[in-house]
Amino acid sequence: SRHRIYHEISGEMYPAQKRISKLLEHAVPGSKDFTEKIAYISVLNAYIKRKSNLLLLSAESDMLDTRELLLALEESASYLTLAGLQATAWGDGNSLLPSDTVISLYDTFESIAEQLIGVVPAAMISLSGQSICIASDTETDLSKLISKELPVPVSFRRSDSTFYIDIT
Image (cartoon, rainbow, N blue to C red; front, side):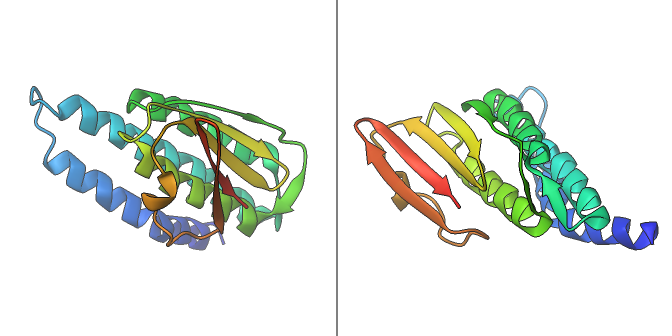
């Protein structure tokens, strides 16, 4: 039933909503970090909106078009830019994947993206098939900074000054 689906989505999104609530408690207009907190809240809001949409679509079908994942990545990228991480997302959204895979890929991307805010100035996000690649020009070894507790396996590689995070 629709009520059950909304209840499940609400439960799934509760941790992100709780984080927003805590940030708002400490967001004092006019304070030094007010704009930074609001920008970060915007990143979380985009995640909640897009993941809720993916969850609704997954309730209707076991397979999701990767176009939906690409749209989620593009919207997240625009809000990451507001939070100080210049981000652009692109890729092919022309295949079907199990809905659980799409949601896990997006969850993993979101976790990594949040960890990159304030660490790297820019990132290119590409979707190809069933993997997401985040590339950033940085001298920082991101493999030492990114949590290993993620829903989907992640690998790291470097080529010259570019660091790549592959979510597969």
